[in-house]
Length: 476
Image (cartoon, rainbow, N blue to C red; front, side, top):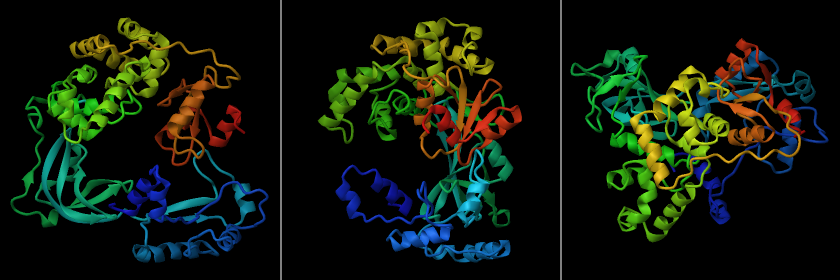
């Protein structure tokens, strides 16, 4: 494993508990949930109790008498945190007395009784060797820096995002430059600064490609001028990305089709369009010729593909790569119109009768479904037996506290994953939405909520925390 985080995540996903036991994971308690009855007055006392019970706590926890002492501890650890056995990106300062925490309470975003201090992200200096261009599922061409390998935040980084050509211009970066790299959110490497003073005489400007690096078609700037796109829908790189997305869990849910297999299917000529997936049973011997494709793997893949034919229309709509149409919009469309034919026949005004669909989204939906590519995609999928209808929702039994409500969820929640809470909202009669508007009834804000929370406040939309959501949902 590249780092402890990857090792931990990979271990916890193991189905065999013996494998988990062999890897000897350990944990350190840093907080607590519900304790009833609570027999401690402070977090410090509680943690001493945990320690006495054999539950590991951090030996580096400190009590501070005032703000000056807190600041001193923060600066002290900034200089020595690199000596710890695990990676850190900051410190958390908490009110010690538990009764004071109760008095302070929480906001919709976080507790009022603690705050995080983030240290500056770790940076590494290295040489930008070259730039390659990646083509996404909608044809967006993203510049990626190829770097002289450098150790950063526990992993060896060989490439980093340059985001887009406007960013390249802002940075003034050139091939051959010494650059500074950091990890966005401690995960994704990105070039953030150029050491211009160290620029070699032969440094080369990075120019947007006039031709697609994958299919040699013309490239065009989008209306905003920020992104460069390949306009050829038959571009192999686009087909691979669209195929991987089509098969993903939230779309058609065809297990086994990841980056590697999607690339093999396209490169081998077995798949040129989505409908070709459903013809693979006729080309089983060719399928078996792919690298690492045994009989059992082929059987499992073909079974998963066949099963996906009966998916509800909402999954298909989400899988078609229609710009701006995500899972929630796909569900709303499918449930409102009931069939693909009805959606195709709908005007832009008809589409805007669906909550959350405005002029731009209606234009995108009509533009795809009425285009040559959209029409033959739908026709060919229909010809191979893919379902084009949405089952009618059974009348829900029990209370519907969110009936007719449009609800936006933002931030990280304690009791729900994003899909879990959206499914619950639907079961209780509500409609989960991906963006905040004047039509939003309320926003459920968890930890680290971002721009959606800000927009809700600007529009005067009600904001509630997870505890209030659970109360309204009847979950306690």
